[in-house]
Length: 132
Image (cartoon, rainbow, N blue to C red; front, side, top):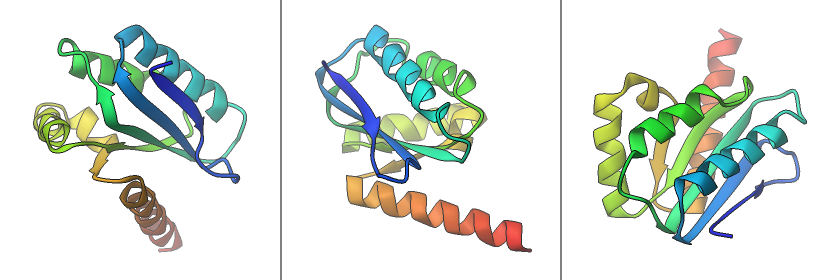
């Protein structure tokens, strides 16, 4: 399996996709479906880590496929943090400039640890806003 989808923590607040080798858009959509199934088992916010550093992304249709997944995700999805190499980081930055919808929910990190910290920072920021 080129994409493994699972809970990243015991509190079920983060789902992690681990991409490895060459993967297809069908596998990507199946992983998104599995993530939605996991999210639907809890009532709280769930953030997503897409660990793409070891995966090889198909060249065509990346933005439309990503937007489809964002639009069809569970209502309790928070942010999507992509763990990427420099080439995918550049691609992500282009997508953010093209699509406000993509920009709103995606972030990029260089490691799993950085992704988890980014999510913690986002949650802390959201809690401060709610407290005001």
